[in-house]
Amino acid sequence: DIQMTQSPSTLSASVGDRVTITCRASQSISTWLAWYQQKPGKAPKLLIYKASNLQSGVPSRFSGSGSGTEFTLTISSLQPDDFATYYCQQYNTYSTFGQGTKLEIK
Amino acid sequence: QVQLVQPGAEVKKPGASVKVSCKVSGYTFIDHGIHWVRQAPGQGLEWMGWISAYNGNTNYAQKLQGRVTVTTDTSTSTAYMELRSLRSDDTAVYYCARGRGGDGYYSYDYWGQGTLVTVSS
Image (cartoon, rainbow over all chains, first blue to last red; front, side, top):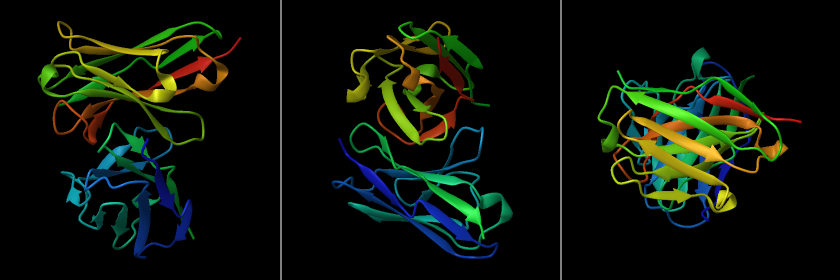
């Protein structure tokens, strides 16, 4: 099975900050990686697919990059609505999620 | 608009089975695969399995092999996930999700609202 490791597990930041979350795969997954945002009591929301493609309707402050085994999600200027938990997902071989990164208000 | 509708909650005893439905609308059912993902209380997301709505092919997470079955009813555009021999650590919210790019392994662009399955004696 492909393992996905996110870092950090928790991130404290302020409105307006630029933040980056990293996701590492245990083996190469090309660009078969997605990022999701989840708020308490809600289903996850797709932000980025195929490593760097912005899902329709998602604000342009979200961006993704990477290939192979290392990927990043960047939020260019944090907004109040962005404080949530973020997950990466590989779909190169079946599917696996990272353990999540909780983005908290500093 | 695309919708995936699930029941709100189920309560089951240890050793029992649960079958969760996922009724879709707003797109051609056989054009996209359906995946099942669960989330235990306070925990992360766990992929459970996938079904091709086109031909019924399935794959399951190794951890759940033998206990989980995913099926579809194309006449009603509904997918089902059955989990057997329930244990307390199966208590979780169970989500169905649509494969974004079509029938295989993709990111998930639409999700059901989730079904809370509680396993308790």
